[in-house]
Image 1 (cartoon, rainbow, N blue to C red):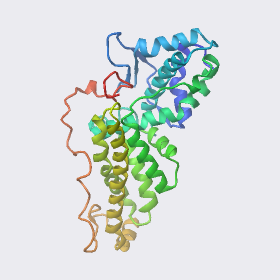
Image 2: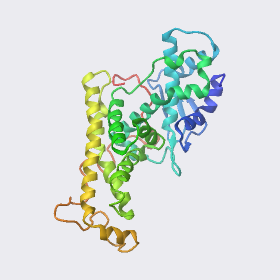
Image 3: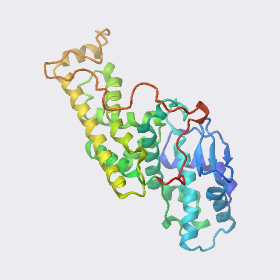
Image 4: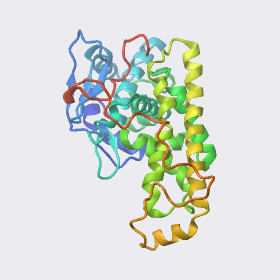
Length: 332
């Protein structure tokens, strides 16, 4: 059991890695106290540090530990839980797979689809596992009944990833929560490819040569982008936006499935070529346009995702960071 705010800060990353069964955290062991007058509640920087607002995060948690073991009303418990949710959410942003880090996808994160998906996946994983985070830290003893309190953010984003992960999970035979977990433990550049590879493994691994696998996964991942990019500017206080968000998640799955079908059609009549490529021969054959029958699709799909060109967002490199945790903006 952690017994102080300082101890919580020391173990926050390690406990997050354990709860999500992640490879590692990109946290640099530093947290920054934001100015009182900033509208930002929390965030992570590309150097791996975490930022917390004193009023929204630090003071509630210090108070929680100062009043350890006491009973609290629902409003107080909600305030404590929200502060803990913020800590857990930002630490999930810092999770990364082998050989990668938070800073790996600087350019990829600038696209609206990536920003939306990163926040939606991170917040859904946060809500799924927050009680496990609390249990591992022993915080039910510090703030009794905190496991039943309320907290949450990104209400316009989460429905999209809920419907998307449910559809992917049903298709490949995984629980939606496991789909979310697998996407949450990698950085933003890898989240779409993780989902795409699940679909690839189920439907294309026996059709597509190993040398064309990466290109196929890229195409499936890019097909998911456009519907999810539309969610970026939705308002969580608008019921119609929340409803449309769920439709966008299902649309992303349908577009990915359509791309899977295109790739399958391209290779289904070319298994001799697949076997040749898998044997290490014919290395000069263009992998994105295999020989196909007259009904096959015309090469890689390029219209369903973000532009391959650098986004026009003019932030300086030092400013390129995941959207801060729950903000005070009208949207979330």
